[in-house]
Length: 105
Image (cartoon, rainbow, N blue to C red):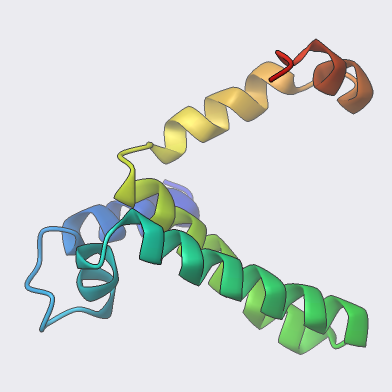
């Protein structure tokens, strides 16, 4: 099992925990909007570290981004496997071609 699969499983377990006993459970209890907000905050922090060219800090912030992405996905009942399947579907397709094929809207 990949570390992201393990983390997603842990987050799913914590989703059922008492919010007073788990920071993840507390965040999930605040709802999908708060989970999305926290993901956005972490993404901005990663961007800042990338601009500053601080490899160690960017590595740490990238880990936070991945964690909070998984929490946000959990908040909307989107499985990591679904995201990975979508990536696999896109593999071998030009990014420009894939984007052009998306429905307009």
